[in-house]
Amino acid sequence: MTVDAVSAPSSIYTGGTTDPAARKQVLDGEVFLKLLVTQLTHQDPSSPMDTNEMISQTTQLAMMEQLTALADNGAEAFALNMRQAASALIGQEASYKDADGKTLSGVVTKVSFDGPIPQVTIGDKTVALDAITGVTSKTTPAVPNPAAA
Image 1 (cartoon, rainbow, N blue to C red):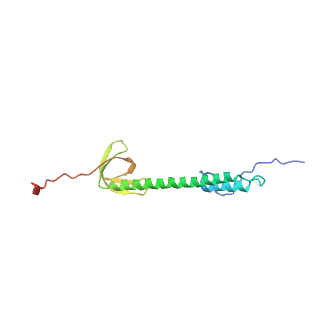
Image 2: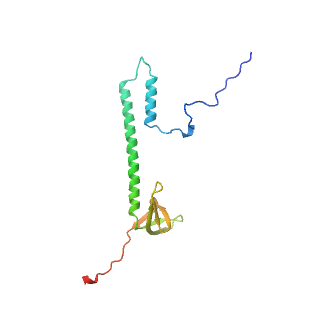
Image 3: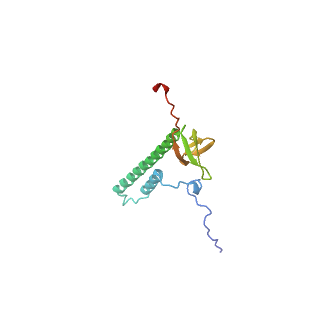
């Protein structure tokens, strides 16, 4: 009697249709909660999970969610500050270094918020806000007042 060799399956079903490379790469609150539920589902009924440990884990989940929210708020505040800074440059003279390392300057005429970093238009060039190397106030020469004399 001949026995066929057993081979490993060519693919393993993981419960999802998502490409493994595209799956979630960070542990967030959802993953943490799934782990906790799985742990509770498979615990030994004769020795259940310690309530102090369970409270500790749920506290860690709440802290993680709050820290994530805090980080998101910080990122939003930073983005708003960049937009305000870029808007304040309109009408100011700004300098920047071009691709050759030469310092150029001109008056900021326009600001664009299309990308993650605001873009300012200096003359006919569009420059990222973080590439600006200096800003000077555009001053007008003082005109003597003949009535004051």
